Structures are given as structure tokens and as C-alpha cells.
Amino acid sequence: METSSIGTCSITPAEFTCFRRFIYDHAGIALTPHKQQLVAGRLCRRLHHYGFGTYSEYLRLIAEPGQHQERQTLVDLLTTNETSFFREPAHFELLREQILPPFKGRELRVWSAACSSGEEVYSLAMVCAEVLGMGDWQVYGSDISTRMLEVAGTGLYPMGRAKGIPREYLPKYCLKGMRSQAGYLLVDPRLKQRVHLRWANLKAPLTDLTRFDLIFLRNVLIYFDVPTKQEIVRRICGALKPGGYLFVSHVESLHGVTDALRQVCPSVFRKPDGA
Image (cartoon, rainbow, N blue to C red; front, side, top):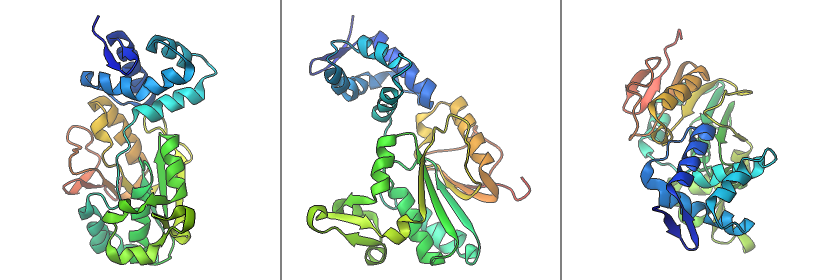
């Protein structure tokens, strides 16, 4: 039988199929067949941690009722967490120039629905502060990875991650790390107070969430099949206020996913006022 090997860990096609089913059932992520080696590599350390010789032993472990934390660890390991400050800068320019100015003196609620390690929520907070000052705005961030939410909660990043931040924003909204934090930047605590982080699985019903004026769902839909995309976007639309905006990545499309939103420009959609 053909297997994929990473170090001393070999995964069979049947084991890989079980992991594909697990991550699809738990997070809606559709792993393609060529991800077998990637899965083996990411999970090999868990086998070593438990002293297991096969992935089947690990699969039996995560199936046990009391292994919620290990199942969360598995989700953390199998989800992709690639992000950066001011990623796809055209979106932030649109916010600065057109979308945010009408909210001066008004309440604004923004949601980064898959915020990963937090660069997106803090980018949004910087733009809100720049355009709206310290008015009545809040940024919410959620992710399925508890590990990434822990990183986001620190607001602390290697200085090399700052390259996407507009130069004029750095002294306004970031602090330079000192002593043990040398070589890092720290998001200004005044911005961190406006950012609220929580765990959320977009495949599950969304509870205890407010309704939002802006929702960023970027570089997320590419990991789902069409039925799951439709399910997630339906929930997202339910959390979007009438007249609110949904941002997806420039490499993503809502064609065949929903007809509840009107396209404003490529990758930006608006919910009709009467919806």
C-alpha cells in the first residue's frame, strides 16, 4: 500500500481519508488529495508526543469523548493561517476614501471573520482610528484556531511583519518593543481596547454576535466546496446589517454562492438596504 512518509511517520491513504473527513465535518475545509504529505508532516509531532507508531492510533485517540482539546489541536494544525498587515491594500484604500467617512459621528461595527494571528483586525483598527478618530467604532475578530487567537491577543509581532503598515501609521498606532521584546512591534493598547477576539467556527451557527456594518471574509472561501461556501455566506449575510459591506479576497468569487448581495466592485459586495 502506498504511504506518505515524514521522518518516522507514514500515513496510509485510508488514514488520510479519515483526517480529510474529520476536518471537513468539523470545519468545512475540503482537503484535496495532494495534501496527504502535508497532513502527515503537520501531525507527525503529535504521534511522537503520544509515542504512537501509526496515525490510526492517533485517530482512535481523537475519537474518544474526552479529547476535545486534542481535537482542537488537530484543527489548529490542519488549518492554514497565512496573513499580513494591510493585505490587499486596495480594500483599505476603499475604506479610507469612500466607506468609512460617512460613519463619522455614528456607530460602526466591523468583523474580521477569520482573523488568524490578528494582523487584519489591527489593520482595520488603524484605518478606523485614522478616519474616525476614537469615535464609536469596534473591531471584532474570530477564528477557528485557538493558537492563532492567542497570538492575536498579544498584539505583538516581529518587526519584519510591519512592512505592510503605512509608514505614517507606525508612530501613531505601534510601539517599538524594548528589552525582551526588542525586534518586535506592539499594537498601541488604545487600539487593542477596540478589538474583541473570540473563537468561532463559520460552519456552525453563529451565536452571541452583534450585526455588522462591515465584514471581512478574505482568503477563506477558497478552502471550501460550493455547498459549504453557500452555507457560510448565508450565515455571514445574516450577520450583516442592511446596507453593510462584505469583503472577500481578490482571488475569490461569490458567483454561484449567493444572490443576496450586490457587487460594488471586484471582491466587495453590499447588502441591499431593505434586506
